Amino acid sequence: MPKKIYIKTYGCQMNVYDSARMADTMAPFGYSETDSPEDADLVVLNTCHIREKAEEKVYSDLGRLQRLRQTRRQAGGKMLIAVGGCVGQAEGEEITRRAPYVDMVFGSQNYHELPTMVASALQGMPSVNLDFAPEAKFDFLLEQSAKPDGTFGKSEFITIQEGCDKFCTFCVVPYTRGAELSRKAKDILAEAKNLAAHGVVEITLLGQNVNAYHGEGQGGKDWTLARLIRALAEIEGIERIRYMTSHPRDMDDDLIAAHAEVEKLMPFLHLPIQSGSNTILSKMNRRHKAVFYLEIIEKLRKARPDIALSSDFIVGFPGESDIDFAATLRLVEAVGYAQAYSFKYSPRPGTPAANDDQQVEEQVKDARLQELQALLTRQQTLFNHASIGRTMPVLLDRSGKYQGQLLGKSPYMQSVHVRDAGDMEGQIAEVTITEAHANSLTGVITGQAELNMRKFI
Ligand code: SAH
Ligand code: SF4
Ligand code: F3S
Image (cartoon, rainbow, N blue to C red):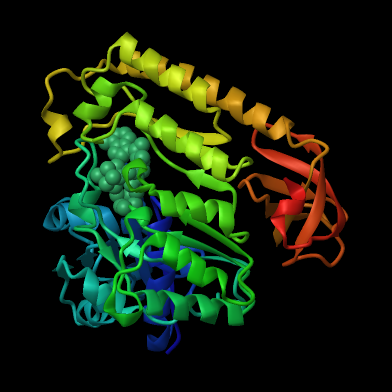
């Protein structure tokens, strides 16, 4: 009998990718995706543990699902509830203690076993499955399949690396995702070729430490990310390549050179620094100084003058003084970001910084976050305004709210709205920017884009 699966995704892009693979895993068992939990026979929460708020959200969503499940039961039906992803990995049985109606808990490395877990749950046997074997996860990866409407998007993710060995003192990822592991280059190339054959034009390579990539390449020798990007750029049909998230320490010269050489590599880089203070960087175990980061930015700009930059920042890390925070503001001023994310430090159980006795008061964190966000918003607005009058290739991959409107991304990751876009959906169009807003641009199509980006710099 056909069944429905509803998957809610929290957290990072790697979870987005994993959720899509979960749907692929369940499809052969008769489960098709639905976007409303009310219709679902199986609800999966693919969770995130990075900050306390992300975790709380899961428990409040579970409360709502319990009520849905009861209604379903009263009507003589059945609804299974599964918690997967990073909260699953970190909390395991604690979840079934707090929410005993949960049928399955699994970690970020076990979703390929979902069919077995579902079969047991249907027999009334709940399960908690936290085995840690990322190799197995990569081996079990299915070919990416089309979305429920039978199409592929124009821009898709490919996970190339999982886990992290860096152990920043604030971060749960090394515990929830495990040690760094890279996928084999030939499997990644095969996935990219398959996507290209289905009309995908942009791929984003994903990994918690994507630029630490060192997967087995041809002849058994490890490939670097730069080498992998060069090989992916040879694939016909793939016109744009992006990667995230990178660590400054793994930003080697060859990868920087790839930004100069590889046309298809987009001029945008998310390179988190977290803080501009050397004292705080050291306490965070980032193992580099602020000046090292600034030198990388300089090299990147030399290689690719129009490169747009993004970062993550944490304010109120234990021990952060006014002077440390001022150093972060100075660094932001020095770099000039196109966009960035900033967060208040959230103590995570089991991480070293959570036990630090120099925790910063909430009020101070709030004030610093506001000040930093105001500066970042100013920079982003400035960056967007500098686009007015420029012509750039935009991948118009979605339809907009209004008739004839299409949305897409600029090479610099800005959202671009185009009115009267005709039949350009799915194409890379040459768009001249006419208006800029804090979070997006508006433009008009002035032609079919030539794929050579150099023309636009
Ligand atoms: N691997 C990436 C980041 C992954 S987590 C890197 O090295 O930068 C995404 C972002 O969440 C981090 O960059 C950090 O800014 C934020 N983050 C992680 N742990 C956090 C915590 N305990 N409190 C607040 N923000 C946190
Ligand atoms: Fe977390 Fe640091 Fe690893 Fe990034 S590098 S995932 S912040 S431990
Ligand atoms: Fe969250 Fe796990 Fe990603 S903790 S940010 S979903 S790796």
